Length: 209
Image (cartoon, rainbow, N blue to C red):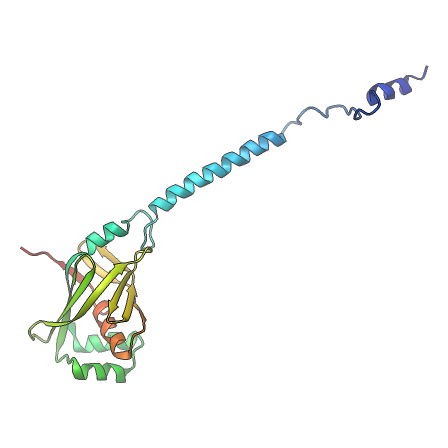
């Protein structure tokens, strides 16, 4: 009897059945079965969604992590803020550094002169800004204002009579600062005015007695 032929027949099994291969129904050491891999992959996806959701909740609109959300920032912004005293020379130099043309600056100063110095006051209510200027010791001058809103990303968007001003801001220890403003549908005079108001000085909160 041919022993080798008998062994081959036993391994082959009944006709139509798959050929038996030693070890084919064991999971080799160091490997993960297909079902185990699927479970692990599903768990990783779920964990990623949970972590991502948590980070999203802590990401604040004005670009940082762990800071105030838009409603909190809006509440913190409300009130009166007064800038530093700004000399005429500093005022002009700051606008030149911001890229404004000297002719536009001089044209602005014809109708809104600064003899020696000026400062600005911003008052934020729930949805409007009021802007007052104190130039060279003159009486307060109401120079504008209008509606504003905080965008979803935390930026302030202010409507200065169809000249739109957008900027990020930060409040730290009752001090308000604005990053360089962006303007839309604004003429040269409006760009000079709003740059001077928001970007030449920082503001301190006014606490009424």
